[in-house]
Length: 264
Picture 1: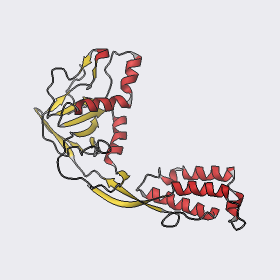
Picture 2 (picture 1 turned 45 degrees about the vertical axis):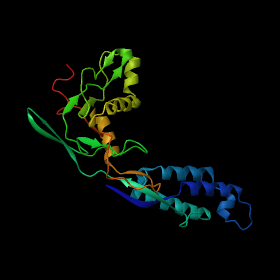
Picture 3 (picture 1 turned 180 degrees about the vertical axis):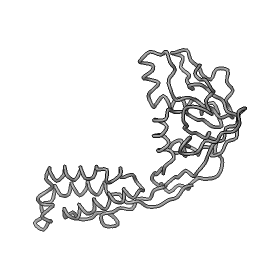
């Protein structure tokens, strides 16, 4: 589901105001501007702004609104003239993408298991700026492609002998044992995980599920399952129509998507 609403931003106005305060020379300029901001005041303001009380200041959250109000208050105290379209605030249209509740059901000889969105699995709502929307529903055979690595340097092709087109490809986002330290470090790099996802997507999979250790999964799930906000550039919001790209998700490392006893 997508919705659009304006948010307030003050970063540019704050910087512009700071520059103006340094250049101010008019006899009628407010005294706070004329005297400037002391190093101690600036240090104190930065400490307050970076404190936990603002909860990270993520765009579209009440914490961001709180931070904006605090900045406006400080600009008022400093005597800086507002430069936005709403006083010290500027209206910026944003598009918010939210993930509704969903799940994946995995059926096998032992029965059917349900993976809940957010706690067991998290879905990516977009694969990048300008990219077509990924599928949001899939009913297909599951294929486990081990680590999903294709690397001639270590003579490894985890897709050798596998037919994955039109199927749900599951890969483990960990590193094979027995590699030297340099190769292990290379494959542990987040870019390596994106490369593995790209390799699966390029094989025309219907869906790709990257399994991650709990600590990494929780970070990814928080990012993917929460609100995703970007600038509204005025283009129509595409919700229907063809979805040529596969569904992409991250899940917890382990059963039921991973074969029992793997790696053996």
